[in-house]
Length: 382
Ligand code: PMP
Ligand code: GLN
Image (cartoon, rainbow, N blue to C red; front, side, top):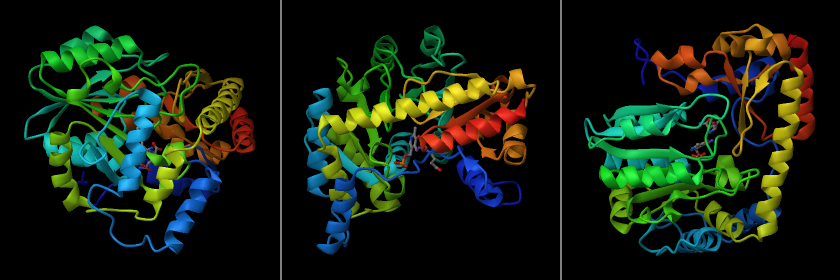
């Protein structure tokens, strides 16, 4: 995690957002929306501050939010949770994943993820001194080869860390793959950790939480966050749910990471989770329209574009434009086209970079006119 001179290298997201600020380029790099979410949620946070919800909340999270998380899981997925024993509120999904990995992975335990993978997975597996095994995902649909998945999960596997919808590719795993993961977890006595922060942002397909599959619940820890669903990425209200014994073990670590966080934001996210179905449908439909605007624009600009089924991001291949080094292209893109993107190679291990080198990740969680302007600028690359 440290460079050879002892300095910390910034995450790719911080680096690319700083580049956007410095150059004035349109930031389609870091994944955060450029519009506020539902007024009810924002008002609830203002109200909670005014009403004095400003001190440390309980270690597990405010009961109102834990109950709302349990109610939401039952309403959307038919999963019944005990809000007092099976739900833990965290400082974003990031802390939920960090505390889970630190609590459950010992020196030398293997953790299986797909590759490309969200950057914090690799960092946390290293901090826990685990061994990171991966199953590669390739264009155009970024689905895993199921035989490779079978070969990678072994008796040495402690965790299978799943992320669907997937960052950075937008892939959504079909039921068949999720069922295989449950089967492999049983066969090898592994625990499933599932990062579902984009659970409400799927297009054309319904989100299927792995914990809802037969045989999954007793060995699955589900992670989510209010950030993506309610356009509140800066609030850092996340959570996890799963068997009470695991939640207790994870809380033991979490209490020494942040202890607690975000008191007035917790009741506000609880209000959000209770919004009517129309809100959730609309959020997905709006984002799908944005995906289409950016996809069409990038295709017209000459990129080969993936078709994400969920999440904030699409993958664009710069090969048809004559660029083979996406990392180099991303560093020059502000000057060439006034746009910032993130190279997919930032989400893979060093020895795999060559396999992904011409691919760029673009965020489409931005206003339509911003996406249109970015696409028009990128058309100048031809
Ligand atoms: N997991 C994935 C797949 C993500 O994309 C993100 C953030 N974009 C996170 C976790 C972190 O979520 P949070 O901001 O709630 O910590
Ligand atoms: N998850 C966001 C992304 O993938 C960024 C979060 C961060 O900056 N750590 O762009």
